Length: 205
Ligand SMILES: C[S@@+](CC[C@H](N)C(=O)[O-])C[C@H]1O[C@@H](n2cnc3c(N)ncnc32)[C@H](O)[C@@H]1O
Image (cartoon, rainbow, N blue to C red; front, side, top):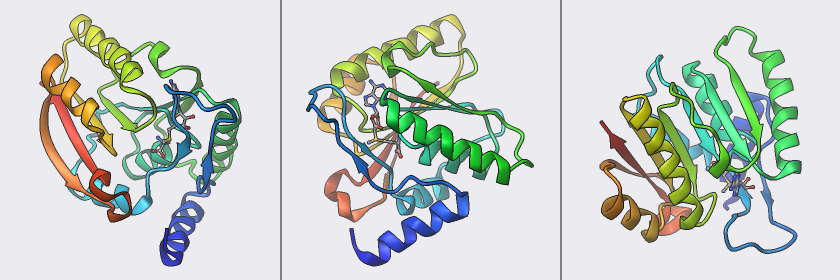
């Protein structure tokens, strides 16, 4: 990452009163669960120039890390956000961020919460309708999470969106061939991540 960009990342963190810069690798390599790395703020800025979060939306960030995307969305749109994170240290950092963020943002009344646990075991709530993924896990786990979303939609009919940052081919193939989700938008967002530095938005209406 370029020096200017690093400064930009820290500037946004300071603005939100959180600490989300940096990486966390797993001590033991796993095939299914990926490391912590936050979505670049510059990419989030591009995404939300063309993607609107409505006041009635409720967002889940699967593999929320230190909470950057959750805080960013909460701060800009004041909608309920849930982050789900399985790494205990990273989860604790998100909770610390939340304590400071809440102190400074008392005027934002929507709930923001972090759940410690596996995304594939998250109980999708009937109000959840926007699901965010930045390459948190393997396609095997992703399939389980998508099945949980589909089951929830069967029980409580509604339009749901999935936002994928850094979309790998196997994820796209699965969504196209095995699910009713339709690709509705592509947003190029971050050249540092090469051809994967983009968002794909899928909708089930
Ligand atoms: C690439 S980071 C994305 C962080 C955040 N969503 C963002 O965009 O800034 C992926 C995160 O997913 C977490 N993770 C990996 N597998 C998970 C799982 N099965 N359930 C919950 N969290 C998971 C990792 O610990 C890591 O913090």
